[in-house]
Image 1: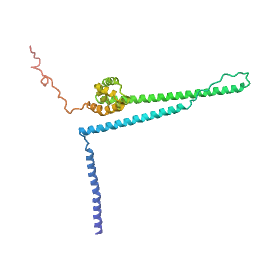
Image 2: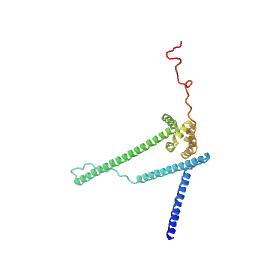
Image 3: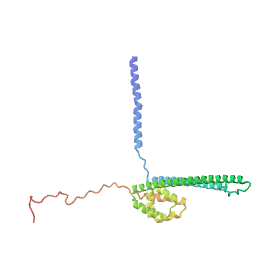
Length: 266
């Protein structure tokens, strides 16, 4: 009897342990179904999302400009403070003393020390100039590499958006005439739809002129909030229509000989 009870308990325990697995499987299935559902927006919702993204992009760029301005202000303040400190000058080397002077030995020793100090000064100045030139060259090279990469990415996006390289070059030439501010030009180069923004502006010189007349903050906001949505409409959407059927030549029947072999018709 006790053996039977223990056996029943084992069976019941096995059934109980199997039930959570089934619930977990059902939960996993439900989770997969939930992940398969895609979030979609109406045109108004999508426009609002684009507006929010544009505002956040603008604010991020604005913070970046403010940071750059603060760093530049700090650099100028440091330079002004350093200018108040008397700069080290090259020691003057006195002329060769008269050998008949009573203090000739002391004057000669002082002159030798001045020559040494002047030589040390010249060596330090040369090392400083070389270090500054190397730093300048490194910064120029890094900036050139950065601009080259930005340009390559911009060209790739243009091709993906259906803009050929010759067309992109013409767009750039037309925009250069108006001289966009550097932050706006950089935004166009880096934005995913930058080539379309450039194309729209080149096709609408009146808007380019308007942007060039605005202050930087207003112009940047205008490009993000007004021009970019219009440029997005230039994207060529693929059609679902099937390709047209291939037309058959003639009657569509394969050519055949007329009459018996060897027969001629005059």
